Every structure is written in C-alpha cells, then in structure tokens.
Length: 176
Image (tube, rainbow, N blue to C red; front, side):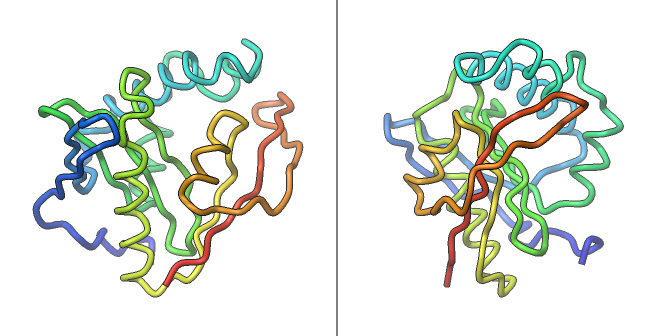
C-alpha cells in the first residue's frame, strides 16, 4: 500500500477553526517538503520547549532539517497539508496501518483549529481505507490534544531517539 496515492486528491476542504481561522486541508505535494520540514523544526523548538530539554529538542528536530529524510518520510505516508490564506500552517501523516506519525500546527497557529482540521481529514482517510484504529505516540505537549479528539492513553513509555531518552504516550482511537 505504500505506493498507493492518497485518496481525496481532489479539491481542498475548508474548515473553520476554534478562533475563526479558516483552514483548507489538501493532499501533500513534493514541493511542500522544505516548508513542512522547517515548520516541524520551528514548532518543536518553540511549542515543545516547556516540556522538553534543549538536548531532547535537538535530537527530536535537528536544525537544519535533513531534507532527504523528509522526502522519504512523506513519500512513504499519506500526507495532508493545512493552509490559511495560502500559507502552510500544518501537516499530518498517516501510515496505511493506522499509525498517525505526524500532526503539527505552525507555532503561530496553535489552538486555532489547525490540528483539529487535519485530524478530521486523517480520520476520514482512515475510515475510507477501512482502518478501524488510529494510533500514535504523543508527546507530553500533544497529549491533551489527542485526548480532546477522542484518543485514549494505552501507556507511557521511555524511548530513545538519536541516543537521547524521551517520555511519550502510546495512544489510540477506534474509528468507524
């Protein structure tokens, strides 16, 4: 299924965020890669800074981002991009088995409905593909969002990434 193109390759879908931010969610295009990699790095280093050390942030989101890593990741996943006034403000990726690998909203667009719009699209995609369970490893920072959209925590876990130890949370949501 890795070679399957994302479904929903038609027009973007407008969503109104909590604070009135209108977001269009569309399929990822390869030319988005550099913008999304930078969005990820900047978001991790700013939004997650209250929950993780500088060492952890550097391991999680190296700066500058490795573009070949990002091109590979996006080519192997179903990916969606959120835009507001033609600016990319978030992205999410889903693997065919239901693993929600990434869901990030730009640091300037936190708590404005961007991640909710992306998750709604991911959930629709999972259902259309017959996936009954979406699962993720949520950061301490993201855990409240996941709980808000209906995930339950399975367990906390200590992982190592680039030799640095982290705590995250295995979470899941059953969809139909």
